[in-house]
Image (cartoon, rainbow, N blue to C red; front, side, top):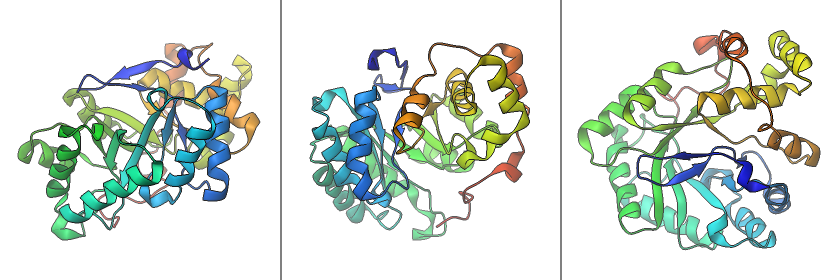
Length: 279
């Protein structure tokens, strides 16, 4: 069943499953079973982070599912307290050890943390370039980077991020950052794809869902897929996990896509911290 998930080709030639399973705010105690169940349903992309505190349990979930390592796309992210080069190297190895793998498919700088380390995420990025060069990270990218952050990387480093994982959903389309990514070959990954559930009661979304005989979550996730976003909803509820996977047997027409896009509230729609000040 996993082969129904479309893939997106990254700027380094690697591919990434467009739908994944996120484990943010899933407790370590629940993460192993959640990952195993997600893989049983058909997910093949698992998104975790050092800051989530559940890398070891995610790795156990992959092993419990009985899949070969190369069948599962694994992403993790650098913790905000490990941006200095020596700290980043140690933290990356700790992720490999916790997940019990010798490589990651994708490794990200989790936040630019511009108020720390004199804002020197550039030196951190150069360390990630080392991980890519030695093969321990097949692809490298960033998360929560704004256009000025990306422009600085472009001016001062050699490797263009493969992805930028940002908050994006119908209430925060984040189109300026997405447009920069599209122009420069950086794939957008959307975190909080349903605005922490806020959009699921929106009258536009519920109306579209009723017309299509789908759930509001399915409608919003399908909107992301058709925009080209990589998306990874999270849930520990088996029925919801399966529901979120069932978005490839219908499509939204252009008018419906536009109805959802018009829900954008700009910065007023943001549910998480702003990358310019967080950290």
